[in-house]
Image (cartoon, rainbow, N blue to C red):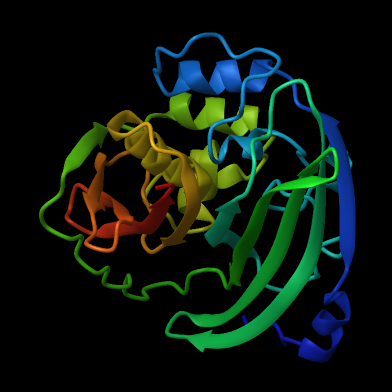
Length: 286
């Protein structure tokens, strides 16, 4: 099957497109995620600040079941550009945490298509879309986020799997994680994520060519942040991560952190085969 033509002139018409969502931050999602992560936190209630990255439980896109594409996401061409490539993944994000987002507050999320880039990779065409998300409470910006989405072709039969880079050796703190379908289901439910690679094994393996159910990129990032929070109470002011290799539900992995000489903290997820699955950096206050 011929690869689809990437019409960048057409896709670039989505540059600058924006949407705004408003929501009162309810306590249930935070309490449900705390239980999913096996945390012993005090109950989250009005006035409690959301931990870093837990804002992903809010401002969720809602679309009719009849509007789903083949992969369970909303069909493209609305807010996001209609990239003619079938596979979609969360490639990475960069954050500045500027102020607290308290439960009970009415918050606003303003999203803008910031950049669209076409690249030719070893596995075929890649299109990267960067979306800027800015969050506000009472007119004060709480979070600035840049979100990178990558679209790519279906796997070619018989094509060799890319060779992942090895994870670093040595750390100051680590945790072992055993993903399973229940963890993936809970996170999909909490984020209203219909992407079939996270719960539909025949689709994930037979159509998109993965070794099993795919562990969500933002879930891995949340687990890295959770590892940091179990190690220090310092306020996180910045965070950035890149997804580098897929983790599936039939493999174990571990999260690691190492303090850097410049005061930042490096975090990473290491697959059981030694591959670096996600690389991240956190900046702490003080």
